[in-house]
Length: 428
Image 1 (tube, helix red, strand yellow):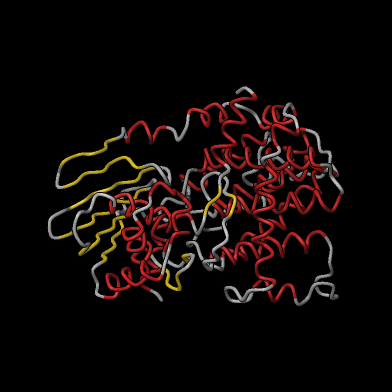
Image 2: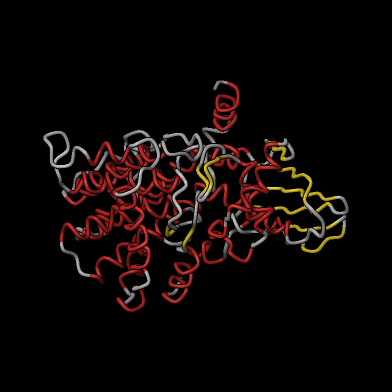
């Protein structure tokens, strides 16, 4: 991978998102179908893979007090603004919500889970008196692979090719070592990476939202009330924990502020960025050091996600993004390639196995835990303290640690999603 290709990947991969990405994905699919309707919408049928279902079941929708796939689909169908992509929900109005409410509350939005679809999959069928519009999304949140109206195909992408790779640039990234990625980032100038600052500003604004707005269930407020006390103090680990908790709780409660995403997800973006930016402030890092560390974090996040896959049974916001943050923090603290690798090894022996039971405000506690682990893993690594290679799934190289983490999620937890869904849908 060249420096120019790296910058291209970062600019494609680090983009603003509004709302939890899975409800947004459903809304975007429905919005695309909605543009084809000529008469009044009468019903919607939605089919999703298990990962989309669990991640959209309880996540907040910006500008809406309701949660769930039926509301996301109905809102998207009335918005009809797919050109906005991951920011389409910023156009919600009272009229849109009123139309969606009529459809949802009259039982005209039906949702089912397609269990044999292991990768990201959303199918929306919109019906009117004269039309049946089908839209299908696969493998990436904005990747529309099929659009048809009354049986006439309007768009058909090669889903097989899409499944093989999200992007040729990601394939190039997967061929690299963590040390090579580190070296490549260090070859970029401050001017070339200055756009990384946009994500820092955006996600810090989101983290500050709960200071003046009631959100979620009060996780951020409870932490903030103890800042400076004997229980929490006001050190770096507390600042990281509060920032990540507040931003995640706000976002997943439906806050209307955007998030700078990473590897296709807003929460992953804040989990990568905020621990690194808080560390940079704490140690007085220069802007060059800061943007390089954040860029490195995003690339490592993309690298790990490429092996783990989208919507894993494990919490990839912690397993992938917090591990990436640990790598970025280690870089900020002056860690060399060996120490960066040790930080990743420390994380592989710490956070692997945390399950993903859907997007919701409770994720704030998970990513706070991951961020705590990120800082301590980095600190240990810079002191040349690393978990033994013989420890569990740990390995000699960071690349093999990452592959081992992915193997646990892909091969070792094949039935986990089904059990999580059974609990989520039947045991409430």
